[in-house]
Image (tube, rainbow, N blue to C red; front, side):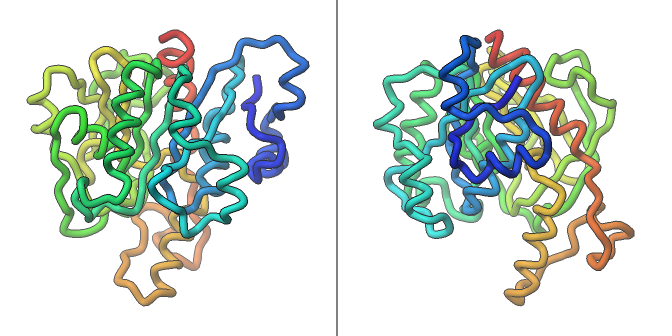
Length: 296
């Protein structure tokens, strides 16, 4: 079944060009199919890119996912056209009386700030609290995961000596968990972050289950025991070129940045990147939707 997004959202044409079945709002109105209501709080600066990446991940066989986009009322995006934000995004006041099957809270480029110093922190806390009673299952990504763990469980983040940047190998700690249905015992996933959370801190919280870790970059996946909250510290939704864009952007700015690990062929940025995480990224989202969102 298709992912359902607004007809004029830029992601629509991109996904159609990839032969991903996209159902526009007009088409959906003529069909009587049970929908998965999905709310995406997009905190990434690259709004349109992130919309497309997540819409691609949420296009899952046998499910129709109806996506709504949420923005912070207390923050104005500097990297997305105002017209785009006003056309496709809603504020919390516009959705707070609704209930959703699933919600995604993305990362944000504010890792090195204290949580309380983020300009929209109070509004984000209100949304995260609201999700507990209004969303079946919420997926927190990267900084979003750190924010959720701090707000709900008091788990601190710590600055890394060097940015975790590249594609890293991970192992599964709970192989029988439905989230990992179809996974290999070890898999790759992208990371692009300056901070981390500590596995020992997670183990001290009885309501949390540690699911996957990496020897190189630490904690990757965990969840609440009731399956209402999932936390992913990396960016499985990233497409082939995302890390390349980040790398060359920082090089152009003259910033000190390492070549993303295990990403370019032979670790040479003159070579094309390798898309080694695609299968497991799609499985992660499909399993979350099938086992925890649609049946939650």
